[in-house]
Figure 1 (cartoon, rainbow, N blue to C red):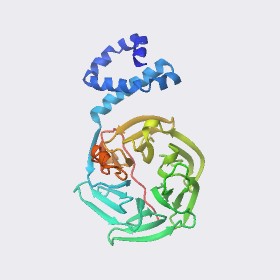
Figure 2 (cartoon, rainbow, N blue to C red):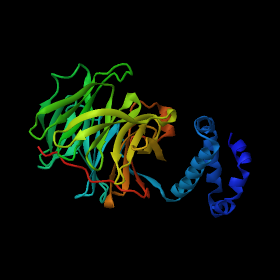
Figure 3 (cartoon, rainbow, N blue to C red):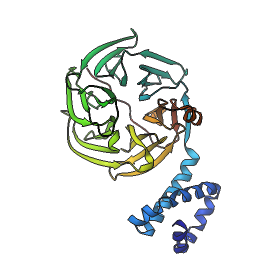
Figure 4 (spheres, helix red, strand yellow):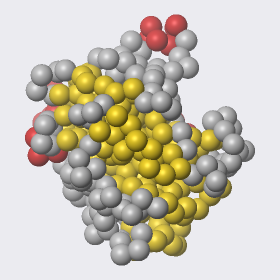
Length: 364
């Protein structure tokens, strides 16, 4: 298909002879990108005309060459997590906060000293967020709890047992711009036909609101830069969704899809937003993070990592210009672990050319 398009558009290609010479240093990469597009040529050919296909090809080749020369992926936290999740950058101390769900552990990695400090939790801990009054808030199993890092204590605050079905637990969560803690649940069986999960908010007065139920596996979430849209992932629905968001009440309405996952993109997991309003989605079982434009529903960029089970991501570092990506090794056999020895580690992606925003803190 690509060869056919090249033959039919020889004038188009020859007109860019100078451009190709300028990029000759990326010749091998150019061939790689063209070969990649061979597998997608039928898809694009069926849906668009040849000229649009070639424009897309040109965009990916040029941006790909530029990306290949600038992006750096580095394993910065070598301590492996069964299921690393919920990364949050703490600017004051230059630390990365995160959890190991199955390891029942909340950890802080100091980027300046490379030291890790951890607290063990009683239950499976889905996520952790900073608390404005000091310490942190976690969502573990079916309850919210405060964490006092100095006293090394965990104090239950509220639970959702009366609203949850059996065999569920909290998973991912994040604080909204008004200081509310949103967190969702999932069924422990993780079967595609089971929708036992729900989305909750721990309000600043420590009461709990359920927004909706019938969730497969509640996961990544974030808000638009103007705070008018709430982005949400139910992993086994294989899409990113959006809601109109009322910042005054925390209410959600007008649910709709903004991005449908492609077959090779795995399972959408954790998510964050950059200063240009684009979403970064970690793809479980696909070893990559996608940059998505929620306004157009298109994938803008793919960053691949040396861990197949990428779980979540957040921006951090100086000026929030680095992307930190957590991963998991749970469920991997010996052969898979041999192929992916850094599974469960946490990675830093630099040179993306975009920045993130500081996290919000729970105000209760």
